[in-house]
Image (cartoon, rainbow, N blue to C red; front, side, top):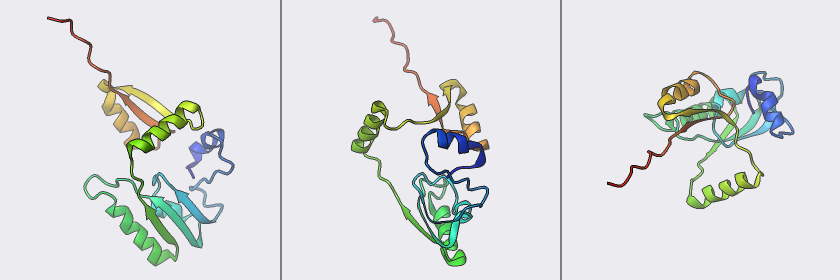
Length: 150
């Protein structure tokens, strides 16, 4: 599921079917959103009247964590007749090693929109805040230069 500007990218990445949530043209009984990127209200448009969304809420807002998104989910369940279920993925060293192996083997390819040096971190944050970049925004932190021995 993505917005209109990202449909071609998602197809290029190998998706058999791409849902443009902005059109509301198609309706589905079940939507799985592991990244928790879109609000329950946005996903509501692509669900059938009794559809189910399974979503990871991520961290949510900086003050209240995922509570705001959970409240939206409760409202969606009560008002729309749709069901929203959530899950939280636990990041472990084992999981990160497995994902690293999948990337190194080429079985998955991370999508990177832009890379910024640390000095331009504010521009990276602005890009993420202003819209939806087509992939991850990376801030590269270079190790400090080695100092000669005294």
